[in-house]
Image (cartoon, rainbow, N blue to C red; front, side):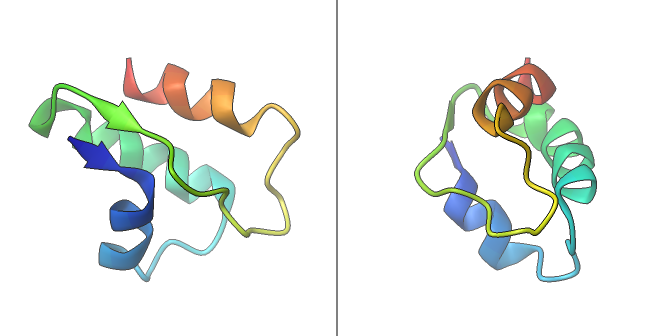
Length: 58
């Protein structure tokens, strides 16, 4: 299972929400499930951040 908190910890080079989306897209083929367990603390995190992360994973 891919945990958002683990993605953020293991990818310290991710500096904004768009980079996070790209990272999730790259990792989606390595895991079957994705769990959003934290809110990304980027200044550009949109209100619909959960929907956008789930869409990037699928």
